[in-house]
Image 1 (cartoon, chains in turn cyan, purple):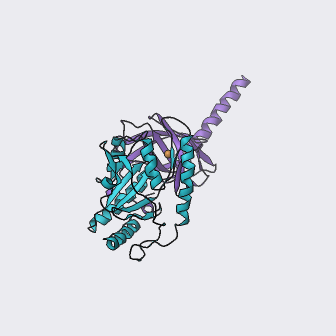
Image 2: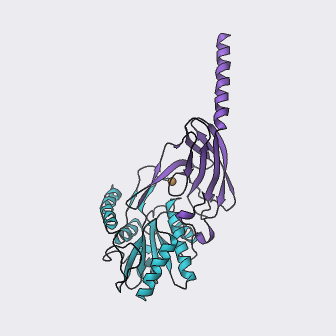
Image 3: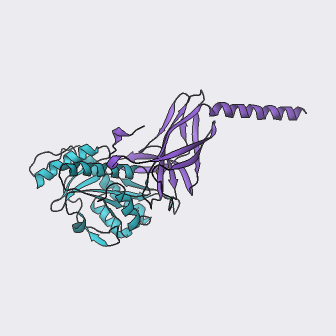
Length: 202
Length: 155
Ligand SMILES: [Cu+2]
């Protein structure tokens, strides 16, 4: 019941994200990068989560360079791997261009996604992809900070499914949120827009 | 005696219709993607063609895992939602495509038995009319450097 209530509040925020989807984003110098953005205020910020080695980490530890951040769960055999593989592909493109780029996968299913499971999942796509989990409270706080939506479906205690939003956020260590990408953005588009922000912000 | 004849006729016609229907369903590109060693679930994908003149439906998938279901994924305002469905229609003369982001076979409870590259996962597809069809899912990589986008799905 608690989860359901949390879910409906964050859904309203997710709907808000959609509203801004078609506005053209601008970087710090007022030059457009890519085709999507949201008002940059209040997305992201401090979080406290648990790394794949079981250590407590904060946003300062995790976002040490331009970073693509995605929220999903490893029990999802379909959408999350596809989006994670795409984000990894974008990172490989950017690395080939000489950019330093990080990728992060935050589980919204901490009950099943142990540090090891989320770490293995992330490593499957990119050696450097960071997998994060935490307590239910930590994950919920991080999800709220990033305005993502998730809701555990009713059903089997072991094989339950979780609805979740699928945006990928581009975050910078100093300036925070830059833009977000939707599922239908390709690795190439993400790489191009990210490179644009990196060039302008550094 | 009369009853016996009727019974034989019924069995014969049943056998015939199953055999006929079976020959109408063709399954291609049965694949699952390799998973991390500790993965709990994996998705199965394929194309199903119905060369017959009767609509059919994939109603069950059996494999040696604790739970196997037919799922679809729906998207609403950027939120992905997996849904357990009763079946996937395969229209007469048409086809059904199971691919990432849509219909998939959901293999659950993999713990300790991940999908390892190039391995084969035997499964039984159950169709409403064609009955059981044995298939082999091949474990494939997600692509070089995970470099796969929606336009490059090889189905
Ligand atoms: Cu599923």
